[in-house]
Length: 163
Image (cartoon, rainbow, N blue to C red; front, side, top):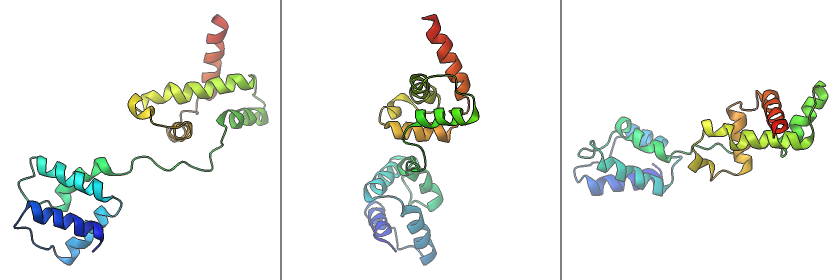
């Protein structure tokens, strides 16, 4: 048993006086479910469970799991293998492939477009406002938003000529 599962069982005992210590297997299941969470997340999950339609009975791992979801870590750590300057990396790749037809400022504009506009189809604006540039870049890479970068560059270049 871990400190987190001990805390969890104490919360359950306070809310459900008939709660008794679970079997060793159940203790292990609960410990595994709770190991990635901090005490505040466990408290919030117990509180949300109690307010739900299930709140009148002692939780089982299957019923309780859905209340842990909002508190799981959703953001992956930034991949350190990603280039610090996506503009430079994309331009250098185009130079190597013999298809570089724009200036660095155009690559910068293209990357900014992906990180500030295209990403909105995948991340809501409120969450996006909390992301650093590196986090936005990571998400854009994860969703493959740079897969059509050449078309984006062409679109932005044509749009700029019309101004």
